[in-house]
Length: 162
Image (tube, rainbow, N blue to C red; front, side, top):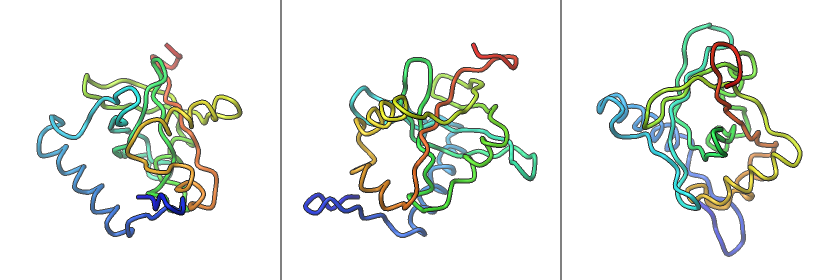
């Protein structure tokens, strides 16, 4: 949420954010993925995907639901943690093991993650900003107190980029 008159970002309490994540995961599980994943709409809502990573310490599969936008055949998301200053565990996992998979409305695919930098980061940040759902993205990012990584999930197949 954003207070548009002052441009400041208002974030729901942490317990609310964590509860919303748990409800979303439960909805996916209860409906066998029929409800809860979605495609982004151009200039409209961002999509929802499930990212499956390998835990950097446990070596076990971990799954998280994330908002994303498309950039050609690449998927783009932000490494935020409910706008908490700490890096999200899924991003730390991807930094240790960049190969992962995503579940989308039309099936699963293998991806390799990397952080966008420079002009690419600015272009993709603007693309994410163009989708509703994040509110005042710049104010929310400033509230985090650290840079928010723009994560690019590129198609990956048999250990090689597709």
